[in-house]
Length: 153
Image (tube, rainbow, N blue to C red):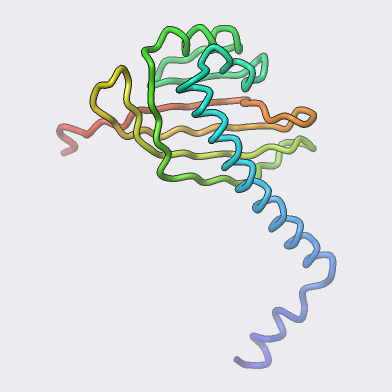
């Protein structure tokens, strides 16, 4: 390594290093929170669906396969009207998002879902969750079953 390359690292001041450490801490927290949150979310959705609205902000938005609804009561009714489900999570990613001074994370999930003992289908789901006191609440939820494209030419 040349002196010039090495000097890039030595020129980072203590305030920049603090920002990097702070960001690393937020990323680690986002990953831990995402693991805990998704476990609770899918257990609730598959086994205690009648309680799912507790995980949503009063003004939350859900987009499910292109169908949108707002408000946790409407979201609760929507989930309750769906047939029983079984979700398996295979991929999980999370990152901190800066929204004013609100601690907020983007959580992305991929897996398989089976409704009413039918064939499993792949799905993707993205959540925007925000800290409300000592609880995490869903601000926005976007769910999509992944279907194969017939003709993409």
